[in-house]
Image (cartoon, rainbow, N blue to C red; front, side):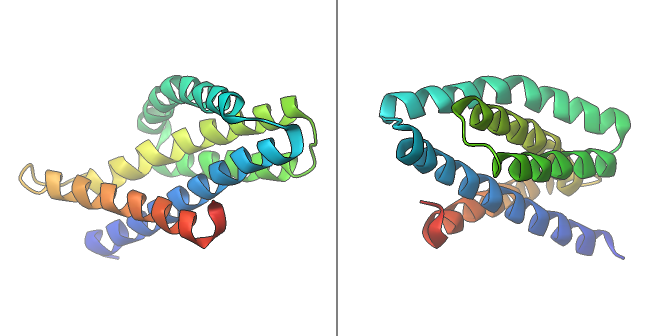
Length: 152
């Protein structure tokens, strides 16, 4: 398989990753409002907690992928995300949903830095900005499509 073909596959994985992430978070905020009475302030606090976890998990996830291998990090990240959703579907308490959100965020932080590294690896210096630009368009389009297909 050629390198260009592999990179197209990484872009597809990134699109799916961001589609699922945006869909989950849009769902979560509505779920918290409907089932637990969260208002804008409480959902903002939930988003802030997510951002706080993300700061540290993203650094850890990227370093983990460099040290233990990209494909191991991807398997681990997607596995954490899947397990979090399965467990979350069985929980009906606020603390449980917070824990699921934290686990999901940690899982995502094993996938997105890894996928970004895979699409930029072995690129010429002149081609790197274009690759990263395409990567950004790919993830942003995944978020946009999730919003319009029922994630909001």
